[in-house]
Length: 248
Ligand code: ADP
Ligand code: MG
Ligand code: MG
Image (cartoon, rainbow, N blue to C red):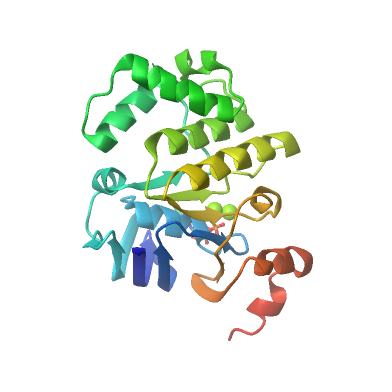
């Protein structure tokens, strides 16, 4: 079943064209990896899919769960089941991680959730990520280390159960143990939901325990190549140059 269909997407940032006609199809339950050199436009694609207002769509369409969401707000896209985890998660003083998640979950489902039920779910998810339960009562990301912020993002993923999660370099800047824990969280998401993933990454480590269906390479705002999971290893050993070299 087709979940996401992106057709000829052209995206401008501050009047500069960054993405020059992207096509992408993701089916339900699939995991796609997006690689590419720095500045290729990977984060831009993530933000554009999420409907961030700084990213102007000047051409193309985004279809999600059979609906044209090209003109929809970020809020509506999140409710429909799209999720973007940020490369640099924001610190939000005055709202605890627990309350933030509960609010986000109620927004997403449009239903109230019983506090004890929520706490039970939350603790279960925190255990997967080896997060101390006390973090639920701390202000969102305030004073969290890089690794803890990334864990908080994956905690959101596990709690919100989106249909499609875009993870933007969730593994960057993490030590080996933190990568393993984050990877375990993503694996849990793959296992328990019929959710799909678009994983933006430079590293093979986070992918070790994940099943990858398709790998894409983005360079200079264009999709230059798609392949299976072996492409990830190839690029890590040999770099992007040989593929980019084939382009005009
Ligand atoms: P990647 O995530 O692949 O490293 P980005 O999507 O962050 O690439 O950036 C793609 C290009 O768009 C870069 O040339 C970058 O300078 C530019 N860009 C991205 N976001 C902005 C922004 N908010 N303002 C100005 N330029 C931007
Ligand atoms: Mg980058
Ligand atoms: Mg980026």
